[in-house]
Image (cartoon, rainbow, N blue to C red; front, top):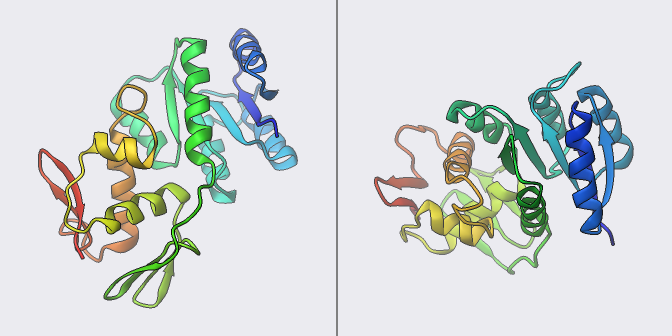
Length: 227
């Protein structure tokens, strides 16, 4: 089935170029020029991926992203002219799957679309439950419980936790995690993506985020899961 992509940007020329390249690659594409129109399109048509400009009239892109994440896990690639790291991290914190800095190469954007769609596609889940005291990770049902309570997670948060938990005490660099969990690389995806997801996992799992129990940092190397 042809994937459906929504392109949201208030610049007609940007939309025209991006749409042309995506259609050429075989995608079905819709457009929106404002944040409000984007939310209406998303509610009505449930696209497989959203390309979303940060600076939009009526409702800004980050607000649209927040609402998309409130409703579900539709992949989102942000388009931003903001090059400072705090701005990029804010988008990742809100749940963006990737971002592209303007001006950008349409071919690079199409490559990132392919990558995000590939790694967001469902994969067969291993059968079994990883059990570590009060923490249970059911890989078949994709459910995490801590002290008997369900812990709500996005698909990538679950994938990252499960991957680390399958190899207790083994240290993985951010580049390795990008390759194994995101099916990407630092050439295409900012390693801070991993940092942000680890931070979000700690908020959900750790009683003391400054002294984490489950996911620890090995300074200068990466992260490991403590059983």
